[in-house]
Length: 288
Image (cartoon, rainbow, N blue to C red; front, side, top):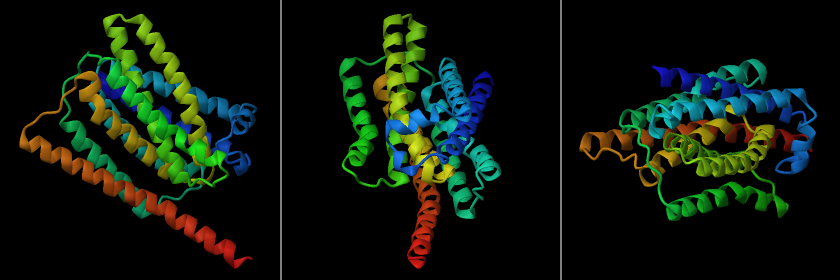
């Protein structure tokens, strides 16, 4: 019950921050996407500061939830906030919910519920340096790839940017669990290193997320991010934190079914963005 309330508060806070960030970001030139100039512009907007404060509050609440619940429950449960995001986006961004998008979010929610249902008990166990080094290297490469594309002058699709945000947020989710476990075992130096790392990764991911929200539908961007921020930490939890999955066939079937539902749901949600981009392209060609 306590964990559920904390997770609900974290999801509500985080998704309200998404909408406020989108409002602020869409007032800035799209040419600033994936550049520090976008953040320097946003620093002058009180609305952005409110969004950043809510984001920070959501991160703190998520870490608090990890003190009382396993990562394999907290990460999937956070995706249920997508339903709140659809309402917020319709009210404040004018993004009318499409039936296919809402259906996709429902599939994602159902999928992650199946994943969470088979979650193990919370463990306090931290892997050695090698698994962490490999994990951090791979996720950082995924998070930073869009900046390399942008530096080469290529236009980056908001869905691709959202994937890079997913890598960054997944890494931060793992670091949040590391912070929580470090507090439990009193490893304060490790906790401090994890906090510093989380701040650096957060800046990298936040700039990409803000850029994606400039031209991408909020529900689409956050759905991609939420799925990656769920499945990657859940997949790595047994390796990094000894939160092993049950091995009985029934649980394995439910887990596989949940992953399939998540994949189909993401396809439906991103299809909404694809249709919007195609319409915009057709309209632009008709006026030239």
